[in-house]
Length: 196
Picture 1 (cartoon, rainbow, N blue to C red):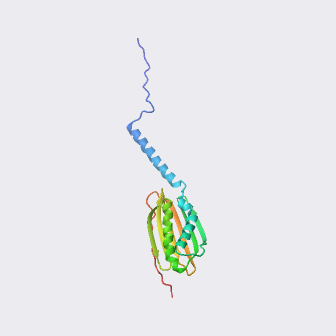
Picture 2 (cartoon, helix red, strand yellow; picture 1 turned 180 degrees about the horizontal axis):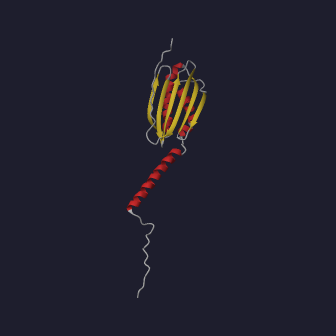
Picture 3 (cartoon, rainbow, N blue to C red; picture 1 turned 120 degrees about the horizontal axis):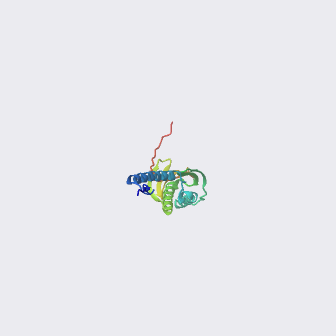
């Protein structure tokens, strides 16, 4: 008998592959996953902290409390203007105040305001990450760095002392994504003599 049987070559399963193919597939998947996460981080919407979002309330309350702590008994009505900037990875707010304060209470007011800002940051769950201050004689500045859950921020305060009845105060609050590291803080002062 001469029978010819059709012998077919065995078909390999599509799920059989070599170790080299497995390693190349893992490399490709890992690279695309990492690239995708970078894109996600870069283009996701930045969400500022509650500390930033509620700053109008805490700033006015902190200023009123600092005026009271400094011994100001007159009206604490504040005149103010404000600007805000919202971006994909950072937010910033600048608020200028005009406060009624006597010259004798300038230093006590700044110290009480500094303590009030520190208390607000702590209450909001922020970790203070740096502090700097300066005094040029014509104005005073202080800056506090903070961090919380992927956000780094700073509160920058410039105080222009009272001329006898009113002082000016500028508060800048800036927050940004903090993928790595903190915002660096620093302050300096200089007295520039007026030209004659």
